[in-house]
Length: 201
Figure 1 (tube, rainbow, N blue to C red):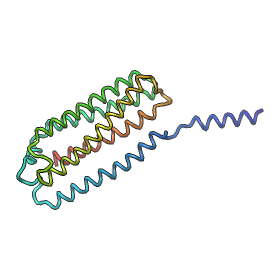
Figure 2 (figure 1 turned 60 degrees about the horizontal axis):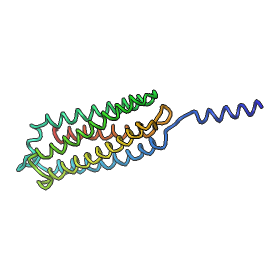
Figure 3 (figure 1 turned 90 degrees about the horizontal axis):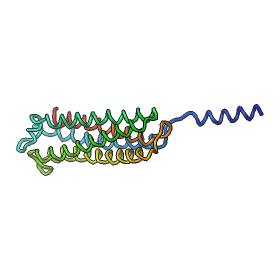
Figure 4 (figure 1 turned 120 degrees about the horizontal axis):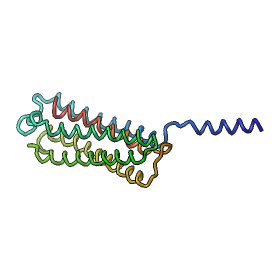
């Protein structure tokens, strides 16, 4: 009887130790592939930049990027803020606060949508297009792919918000929220690098 009790206790203890959930582990592996993807884009950009004497090349509005950095900086600040609210959502649900998580997720979604609208508006204000030389092509490819990732993140956050509204997450079961937050932080870091590379350096 005692042995059985010990075995039961040991079995319960084994299940009580929570490691990385499948959604979180899957997201981490996906992020690794995304890092390699963006690393290839960055490498191509640096290769083109070092092979060109004047950068951005003369002849289009790309030279105005460095003097019109205020609006992109504001959009960058909003995306960084969205990363903070996303992490707050994770902290809230870890404590079992579903309402707090939902409020933080809603704010994150709104900030993400605002960033996408801001990026689309910024495109209309640029004095060059994707067909305007090497810089135009690389600029729109880099920012366009990032924008697509932001859209994907907004959709994932929206699904988390929907499920959160149905009460499907708890302090013990919220792996999807954790996984989505990891993706959102990654998207945020990539944009900070892009902003510094394209608008400042």
